Image 1 (cartoon, rainbow, N blue to C red):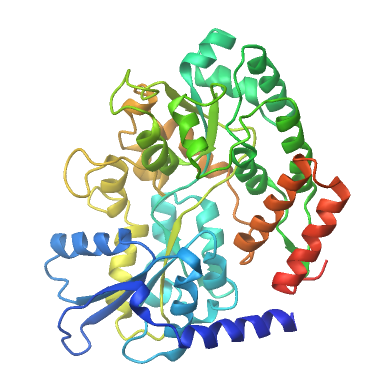
Image 2 (image 1 turned 90 degrees about the vertical axis):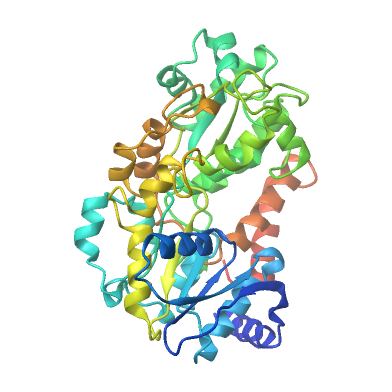
Length: 446
């Protein structure tokens, strides 16, 4: 613990010397206190703010936007320093993604977050009306109350090729495929064996499976402030080894050209499916399918079903500084983005692809109420309504097995798993090296 606190202090000192040139700042002329300082790691929420101002001309606040990418870990140290420094330039509204959100909702920087009730939001009433996915509430809450929510729901589904399902099982019906691949990893591996007989890989690489394994585990990486390896996460060693040894995947790593090639169907083996939320479909798979309409590449040859185990992957949470002088205004915007389930709230526009006009990208949102009255049909999925799978996906996901150190620990764990499956070290050595690297990098004892 002492080492972690020392590391935090060092990070903050380094952050104080950083030049914010890594970010992009769009500042308008200040009008006294009528200024909102918005910090984000992408331009997504700033664009929402622009649209909010267009739709609500009475909202006459100037918005000073600071965008600093998460590349090379630049965003968190800069945000931390800005919160610590306080003053007129301190963030009023800031975003955090799933990889590090717990640091700001429940961890080392959580004390800076205002509760949504302090922002004037009728939290209990709106949560119930909107039917917000519970995992997003759990992640955004601490002992003081709700301090952060997102607009997306990033519960994961299994996204599979229709033509390959028909080839192996004679149907592409999501209910049939769901029963073939789960529940549980034994059924998933049995399905992998069926597919392999036809020369088909069930997934592209073991990273596709990891998100589901991690997300479904009973406990997270820390228990009583010590490193803990949940049995489900330890079993990933064996799942990954089986996938590799039996040729059930193409041995790719996510976010590489080989992974994208498998989405196009041009890898060494045809790949049956990927695990992921709606954003993986919209912003990754669609653009790497080799087409833009049904019949081109793999576009339109996909469907979604419930996965062998519930999980979520990704997401952005909105928080407000408890020391902000413009809490009411920030609260109005946050409520519109995260809890307004009417047809004029951000989430309705987001779900139907109409935030900036007709024909935009449809996405899965945090509100079950909004999705129930929205059109989730996608050409990419052969006309399937994605909400049929993603509404229960959000219900199955849990946020109670996360820690503020997940990004770092996951990278170490996956590296050691690859060393083991490649035959470079024994299972026991991989686990031991994992423990040592976590201690060396984060000061967390086993």
